[in-house]
Amino acid sequence: MYDVRITAIRKADYKDLQSLYENPIQHTCDVCEGQQWIAPCGSKPVGLCDSAWESMRAFVEELSAGGGNFYDGWMRNPYSALISCNDGFRPVSFLLERIEKETTT
Image (cartoon, rainbow, N blue to C red; front, side, top):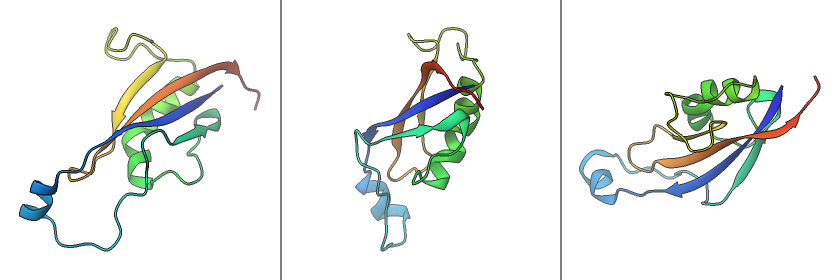
């Protein structure tokens, strides 16, 4: 098994869509660009948003198990993926990268 590094690469904020469709909310996403987590052996990192995790979990688990090359060469690094969370108002793009040192379980 491998660990996977998760890095928040970009955070968008669609105020026009928020004003048209979203009810006012008190708490929004706490993720900051550049923030990182490690998914040990493909497990959900502490502090990572549950919704974001659900968007990326299958990719993290596959990378952790030694897989990759999603969609026949989609990424330059075959042991990575760029996944966005499912928040249509404030989507965050996450870079997932397999850490090359194999871990023992």
